[in-house]
Image (cartoon, rainbow, N blue to C red; front, side):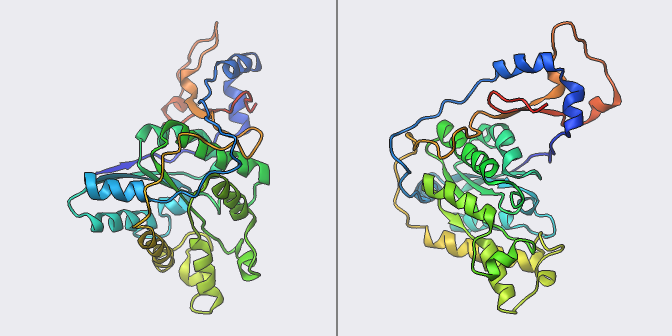
Length: 310
């Protein structure tokens, strides 16, 4: 069984101004419902593993896996993306198990991801979610990435503390100079900070790809279609790294569910964000006028905590 979400991209600043008057913005902001965020006095969470996922697969013969990321996760450039190969790997461990793949990939990085996470991931109730935004976040500043990545984690574990998360760090030709100097690309470093704070395991497939190129076994042209999206050869490198990681974690102990989160790493993480269809929002005295634009499947407003981007 396959669940695939439609790709949605953020509205431009112009479109947001066109559809929401400023007088209505305050009412919308005040109406946003925040997800409750459990906290503890601990500075960071204990390291997590994949024990609960493997136990469910083996004992209950079912597993719901979600893939949350950008166009690399969507599989652009590859005939069989890494997510499909990963799902097949889990299926090979338990051929009779009912495994569901939730594919929620769209351009926009972790910031846009924090907004769409509730509907596309939380509401799908997965047991395991892979999060991939390292390349999409490459040009964003530290606080935007930290607030977004942390918001995704806190949304997930405040609603489903029994589920497990894995971060995936991808790479591009643009970010590869950092790998060549044995440095961590900036966005990867930001994601690593969140992963360490919450004890989230991570797979650095980007370093594996860069190392393959640095050792002169391959080139960016031979492993990607455009310096970003891995082709079948590049996807093979990615999946080889993922497979090794998963095999090493098959015997992870079963950790306690994340019912108590550490204090937030950032001052205001995007833990209460969500998307709403613009055509469902009406201010008193306004009426809906049907236009050809209404045929577009996704017209969204950004609601982010108490701030509305206008």
